[in-house]
Image (cartoon, rainbow, N blue to C red; front, top):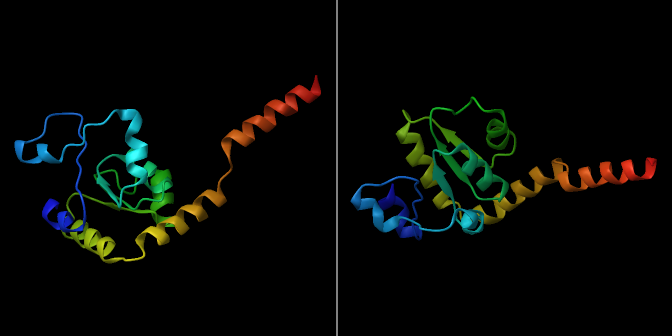
Length: 143
């Protein structure tokens, strides 16, 4: 996978545990608080984390989630099936993983396309801050 991605840009790996020596040059050592900033400027996310896949999708970064939970988590099914922000692929389907990576790499309009998908997603959702401010302001008016 690294050989496939490397000609298209920098490859970074984040891991909470030790990695094999051959992968250490790709380790991205950043503070966890900086992860969303880094991810927002990524071309794509590939990994097994449900949370990071969803975060990438909401940031408008194409994600490929590669794990056994594919199809079993509602909010990810929504991001993948309804908004087409990412792809869930089970580990037994390595060929589909590589095919999906190639398809994303070949998409010259990937950034603008995913920004459009992200905008559609956000338009369909409420702003939680505004929602709670409205509740609090409404409570204050009743007093």
